[in-house]
Image 1: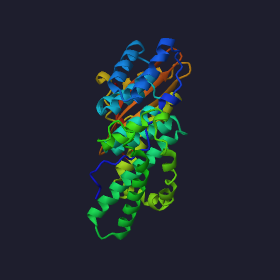
Image 2: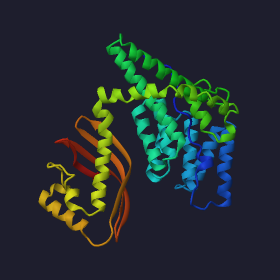
Image 3: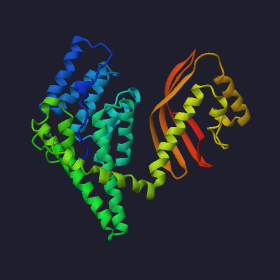
Image 4: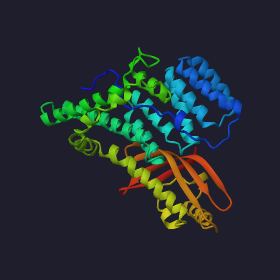
Length: 357
């Protein structure tokens, strides 16, 4: 049975304070503000740090680094919902940055929303494939999902000794991976175990406990067992919940294919992504809508359509997809949030509804 006690699974939050490079020039006065905020955070003066960073953001509302700092502070003081809102808005405004996705995953994992955490980490890796922290965190999330699947299997068949062994191995791996995050001497809220890992790693590198590198060394020992644990780890989604495991990826691929057909001006392929009962704008006749779409797509000049920040919500044979669409033509360049509803028909995901926002 899974323990109800909080287990810090993810390795650490990203320290964008050291790694994020911004293109916007910062005045000397502003350049001094963020180091002051970091200093206050190190001293545990979160209220003052939040007040200072809010003033900074008020003068530079589009500054990613200041907003990221605010998200870290809100995480520190336990305002998780507010921190999630800050990091979510950062993913919308700066979809190319992997750190906000990673930090969203950490917060979702603390709430035991592991599917959401997995989605955010996959987005972080998609934007930055060499982002090692996200890869490590994704491994921890998969380990927890595997633990839940094995535990469910044992509830259904408690005599299955093979599953018992697998569950034991996964729990050992999770326990070992969690050790580096438990540093009550460093955390701002030692009485709140779930915040220990977040509080510690949200700070710049100098704040981390000196013994952390040494404690990371034992990790290869349980990881060596991973080949045995990881092979069956994939099986529970296939055997128990194939739709939940595979449909999300299928929907994402379909959305990408739709955008590619649009970019390539392949009108026939583009229209084939729409279901027969697609809800056309303002109740327009289907034939008239198709003609209008074809005329717009066939206009002279280069056309480029791309999608990112994809979030899929499944409900049986229906999937609601929220994403960011980037459109560039000879005369127009836009970026907007969109929502598309897919339905599964004849083994394919087809668009039933499409709207901006």
